[in-house]
Amino acid sequence: EDERRKYVKGKKLGEGTYANVYLGHARHDPSILVAIKKIKVQKEYRDGLAPDAVRELKHLQELHHPNIISLLSVFSTKGQNINLVLEYLPLGDLEMLIRDTDRVRYGAPDIKAWMGMLARAVWFCHDNFVLHRDIKPNNLLIAADGEIKLADFGLARSFADPYARMTTNVITRWYRPPELLYGARHYSGAVDIWSVGLVFAELIIRSPYLPGNSEIDQISLICRQIGTPTEENWPGVTSLPGYTTTGESVPVWGKEAYMTRFGAVGADGVDLLVRTLALDPRKRITARGMLEHRWWRVEPRPTRKEDLPRKS
Ligand code: ADP
Image (cartoon, rainbow, N blue to C red; front, side):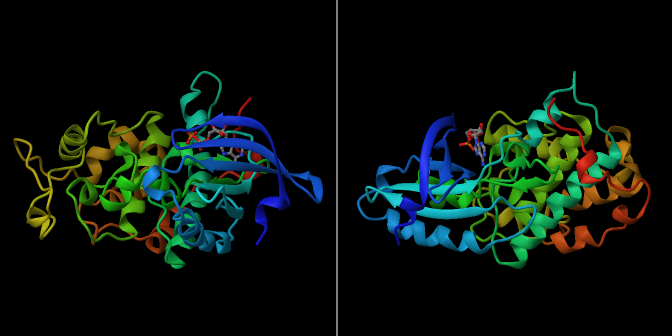
């Protein structure tokens, strides 16, 4: 049980919104570097609740996949702080590459390689009954061999923000699907697929596709850019607890409309994109469906991971 003794904490690497991250190494072998993420646990979770949180996070330790960050250990300190010991990945994340338009060039074969890794990671999570709930470019870390690794499971974050656990406020706004914006209480893996679709779109246009500046603005961006949810395209939507209408109704855009902005990945890539962005979560493609899509089998081939662009 003395997990905390297995690692030695070193200098601070960075500070996120809900955690401080430290460099660390294995006590028995200083060449094994780790990142120790100390979650700023909210007071609602203090006083003995951290051990429950630790138990809840433990099962993420069993999730072993090349495109999912390894969670090496979870422990609480002083009975209230939650510490995650993670694989050390110092080469940054996909957001850094997307934004560095001056120095980083990439094309359709690179996007196909990254999207393949992301789709496999999400399929593996869902196949193991784990929802990620916070997929975005900043949570896709880059490993030395070019592999991208899904990091920062929303479950961990929810201990720093207990309010998020009670509500549908679980995914960073720009990547949040319409069912959560409408307050759906029961949701599925489809929430992750929507976020994957927005990462796909962002990789192509190199800027966030739906950067809403409030929840209302997010809904109105979805209505304008994707189409307005109605009982016809999404049976039951008007009964969701947070359903709202925002002015005029825009018909769901077809593939042709997406071709002008997203055509760089070809007609098959656009077909996949449109299927990830289905308004009705029941009609959205699944992770398995993504992996079976014909886009992976048509030219161009995905870039080999060792040849993918990286931070200069
Ligand atoms: P944010 O999500 O705001 O980037 P995080 O809490 O995830 O915040 O991380 C804060 C910083 O710590 C990151 O910007 C990064 O520099 C560093 N970091 C996080 N995780 C790792 C990791 N697994 N390996 C190396 N550095 C990391």
